[in-house]
Image (cartoon, rainbow, N blue to C red; front, side, top):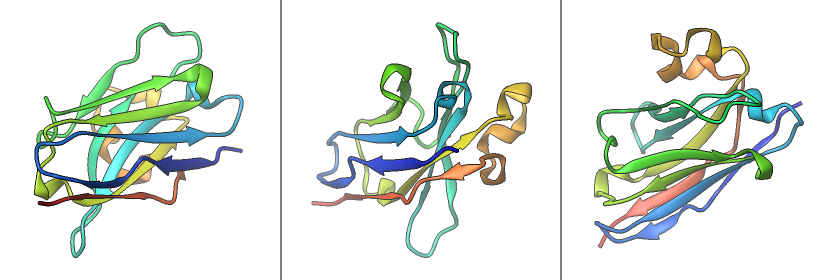
Length: 134
């Protein structure tokens, strides 16, 4: 019942910026927590950022990996059924395929360890490539 499509990836020079989008189908998408993960060649998929769900909430808590905190921002526009990842001061080590995932159950333990674990998320997009090089 939920389909996710990532977009916005591309090539950017070190220090540059890029905004990724995760567009979703489904009337209940606003209630899902959403996480961004990335996978570089030869590396395991790693957590990047997550945002809390909740249909009528005016505030959504966020969580970031240490490697991106202060540089990346996750936010959502429920009217557009879209979650974004704004990336600033990009580094070569940010190069990876970026995936978004949605979870209908994460909200019950948002402040626990599950939010940065891949298997917590029920639905996934196809990924979008981000390349940072000069």
